Length: 314
Image (cartoon, rainbow, N blue to C red; front, side, top):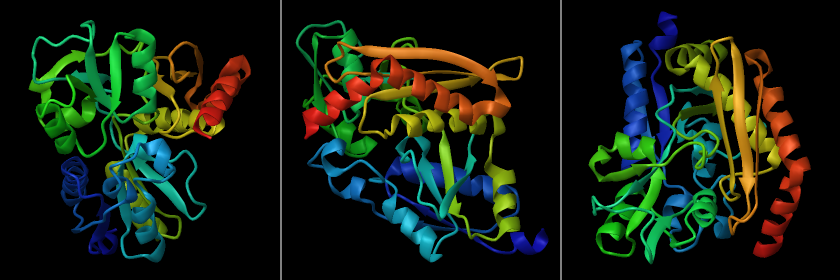
């Protein structure tokens, strides 16, 4: 083990402030376990193409592809991602070795107006998420949802400049960047179920990474309850054949009786149709549970919703 820890862990990351915060958080965990760490910042397509929505530029791997190539050629050992940004199916030569303990999973409303409310009339709310836009259409038809791309600081500057009255974001990123004072509302989970993986940091590596080195990294970074929940959520996402470009959602939790429960579904772009269900199984069946929920949602009418979305974008 000492020989393993004499080898530096080379980490690939995006260059946004949030991505760097997450990477330095990972690095401190590794250093605390005795590893040396090297960090390499890599720009992704999602960081560079900001004039189009995610579904227009091909959301599959839009925030991960360049980092994954660095894993593949061996210039880095691991890549740090926001778990919700990961495509539902990884390339065959890569794997997720760890999911770090999850932050609070809610979506939040952020505004410079402390009195802001989504119930107000004629308001413009920015979001880059197809899911959040669809849920706004469902629960707040008074709101005009407007595309809002860029890293957190870019979005906040757009908000400050008056392009929006508020923006919707994940609590995790807002909290990590210490912008809690701008949160005017934490949206309830019974309406705004988060994207699969929201709130967790995922650690990706090449399958060919030396096994003892890989296991030592996993032992340092992985949070087993979060890992089990994300296995179920990502299994659901794969079954739905979706990524962040479709308005699907999933949230798994561990129950006291060593079982896992997952709520998931899909909502039409206009918010008029939403199909959701909740099922439970032993934690050992996390992956099968996600598949079962995905199949159920598709059979309940989710396939028709997704077909309509594909036709709308054609």
